Length: 259
Length: 259
Image (cartoon, rainbow over the protein chains, first blue to last red):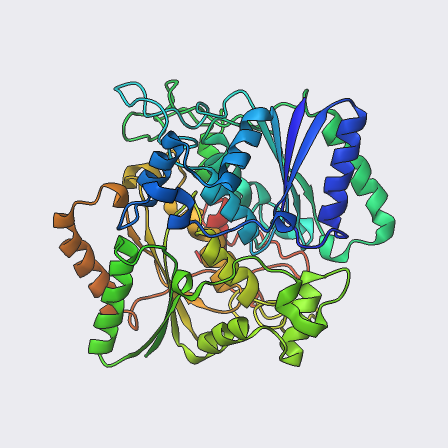
């Protein structure tokens, strides 16, 4: 197994830092290869702009088209090309981050914004009467797996089906479905540590053991069953789920899980 | 009316640039005051780190506690303090951005991560048997209004209730409810331009007219009726919605709208 861990926390001695260190140790001990993109340590540039596209940036700038042109020409900046190469090297991608304001930290969003370029992560594949590009289950990263490892400050109850923040699976849907499933990654159920703001050091061993269990079972864990776009569930090109495919009463993001 | 527009697009000659320029013109013509935080033009630092908290950063860094300590001591960096002052000056906040990977661009997420500090946007108010801090309808920014103005590359059908991306209101929930409603802002229904990747210049006047209508009716538009935390709808401290408050069959994020 070849695992890329994309790590997004400014403090190495944080819970996130400990979880990434533990993952590296556990996976290497099990004989796997691991690479880590520690975004803060790398000084990762978060904001996508014309400088990313070199001589192929047009004026006015068109982010999708210019990023795709630079991708095709091989003129994306070296930092972005290196991350794309790591994604193609890996068979498993772990994103390790704290949930800040119900989403990923800006530095990690900037990794997505800049690395997931047109022609690499979107704008891939042909459009026809039966196919609307290669995405949501197909695409450049198909055949690979992804896993979110997320620390959440608040208690689990606040993220339960009736919790005030909304269900954690719905809060993570734009990331798991919209960012990871989109270019073809199979998404494993997330590893979520709740109550991280008040985690007692005495509680850490149990967290580390749960994390280790997830890491040791990466290859056998069943992915979340997000529907694939081009295999009959959706009208094309409207991309609406065909009537009646969902269990009674299921609505919203849940529609896009297989019954 | 005093409006702060937080603008997040790298290209001034983009649709987003045009919408912000138009908003400034329309609001000033109507006699209102307008300030613009053009994040790319300002070179906004996106990644929250120890440098934000000056001499009050502890080691190891604790982002919530250190940001709150620096807020209380007045030692947050000048760029962050200036944005907090603009938010307190404004009665209306507009976030203008393109939907990138189903959320805001990294530079705007970094504005939230760094400006919405502990003690300013969260960690506000007392906890008791009837109150769990001042948040979700109360807080530092209570009495102010917020509006998302979002350009979306794909067509509206893909973001409809059965659309493959998920419903646009659900995709925006972590921002509208989790970021804006949380510190007390009243959230107006979003202004969404779909199909922006293929917008014909001939279509722009209709978009501009629709935007102008929204701007001219900012003060009379009814906000989204997100439930308030401390007014009887939620169990405290579990913060679960009490049974039976929602219309039959409503689940997920929709639970947090008043019936």
